[in-house]
Image (cartoon, rainbow, N blue to C red; front, side, top):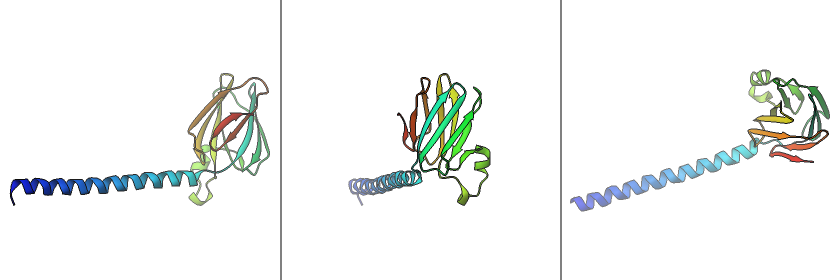
Length: 145
């Protein structure tokens, strides 16, 4: 083969490999997005903070109805569909017994910071609130009531 034909041959091979890698890359991204949406758990919670007291009322997706607890400024509380829990205890559970959703709540200056662990689309949320301000929390985020 002459050098011109060899160059064309290698260009075709490289184009084919590039196309294959691009195809598999797009497929894996699509699979990852579908898996993430399947891992979300639908829930709806009204949440409010007054001083160091946090009140939550589950409207859907939980086995609990009302939660109320006090947090110091450097403490956090884990919440799942069964109520208050411990993140370390949750991480030691058998895969089949894992909670459907799990997040932590921590007080911040005049508000709350939430960290999503499982079953939510968000990693971190934070919001401030006026006294008696209520927020609606779900698997996608938070909004004012």
